[in-house]
Length: 162
Image (cartoon, rainbow, N blue to C red):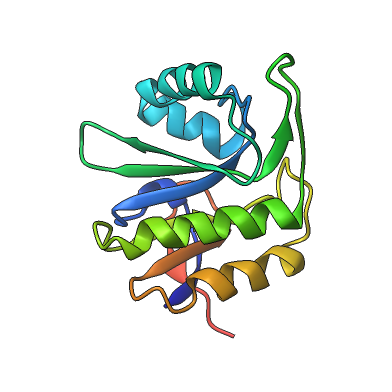
C-alpha cells in the first residue's frame, strides 16, 4: 500500500530508502548528499560500482549499510560516465526502474520502504507523470511504501489526507 507523507524522509522508520540518481552521480546535492552524509560509504561504493559496471538509466543498485538499512539507488536520470554532469530523467527510465525495485521488494527481505518523489528534482519530470508509474508497480507490493511528497526538514513524516 502506498502512503503519501509530508516530512523529512531521513527521519523515516522504514527499513529501506529509495531515491533517484544518475549513473554518474556524485551524491553532492539534495537527498543524495544527505544520504551520503549519513552513510559515507554509500557514495564511495557507488562510484566504484559505476566505474566497474557502467550502469545505464533504468537500472538499480542496492547498498546495505552496516546499521541494517537498505538504500535503493534508482537510475532515473541520464548521465555520461566521462562527464560529471547529470542529465534529465525520462518516464521510460522511471518505468523500468520501478519494475526493478518491485522485483527486489517481492523477494520479501524488506518490510517497508521510504521513497522520494522520483525524478522530479534534478530529473525535471512532473510528479503527475511519475506517480502513475509508482502506483502501477508498487501499489500492490504488500508492504508499506511511504512516498515523501513534501519535505519539511526535521519534521517526522505525517500522512497526507485528501
